[in-house]
Length: 311
Length: 256
Image (tube, rainbow over all chains, first blue to last red; front, side, top):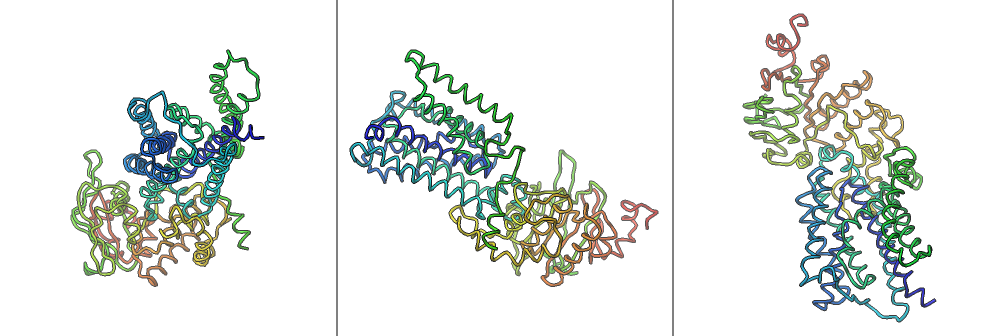
């Protein structure tokens, strides 16, 4: 029992949770508000590296470091958002992707700070419960992931969610009703990117050693594929998508299928092939995702439930 | 009509697209407590003028002053949404809708004040619905919608929805760009009756841009005739109607 709780499984499940959280954040940004953030993984990675550097170089205690990393990520998002969020969505996509590449190169190149591709670490857990340490940490991540899902679910039926949807649907019309759409987009982008930074900081001890490849474009692509697979408009779209991609191909394939060691590289490459194949199949047969309706549908608010409660 | 009693003063407004002057107005005051009409041939710059006033389009130069509660506000530098919050709202000529919002949602969006729209206030839905219920019901009873909990389906429903969304904001100045085009006659009558009521009871100023001239002569107290980017004639409907320029440039000799 102790072996399972401290070993590979708990490591994989912790990461799975973090990815579910990230995909849900992407759902909030892209599925609800319509911000095509192709740089999500860099905000996550920024939080992760900021946290690691604060802990390792400045010996700042865990909780404070998490908070600082979150706030720093938020500030970065605020500055970036101020410049790009009034552009159309294609431009936002390119700008965030460019931003991702810039930060990724910086983290790889500035070896004096980040140790480049050699990675930095080890990042300690904030507490020590012997073999249960990783398990308790997993539970904490679970708690925050569930909290995020609850927030997202509540947002769907809140006035703010309605505002975000209206921005996605028809921004000029929302403006004509007196909604400060640009400011709201900046606020929400900052908040959700800071959340990504928070989960990055939380993920750092799970990884133990950090490498630039953890925050590259590949990660963003994986998240996008996951969200579109699951359905970008649905609350559980990110969750289902991550389970189907990362869960199925990374965790299940790597642990269950016995592959001779000399062929292990094939599996790594096959993974992206399988992602792509799944995406093509899903888009062919369910264009709005696994959880989406069979036809392209646009309605994600379930008002009938609220009506019943009141009646 | 004295200048001071109007809510909007426009000075030296200019807008050109690719060298062609679309709107060029030296001085104009609009916004009496009542309904005004803006008429003119296609391409006269009527919609552009509304877009310039509400700042949906940026003007090349010029100033717009807005009078509210005895204060003079220069709105030429204010943003589109800020102007709407100051009490000047517009309805759209081309049908505009939020495709993922139902009719009720759309109306609730319009009624939600900034107090409700913060990313952390996720438990305020019930409160909003409670405070908004009466007002929304009033409009939903007045105009008949097939299914208020569903999406607006027909063009007419979307057009009505656009108007109701604006009215829920309780504007002081309402600019309506062809409000009745695409509406059946009975709905048009309902809209007009409501407009009259609003101007009488709430002191709202309404400017209607229309091609349906019978409607303009019937409802407006003051009519502006616009052609080639300029306001050529202003006056009571009876005068404008008989004016030679208007007849020649717009209505055609036979109709006078």
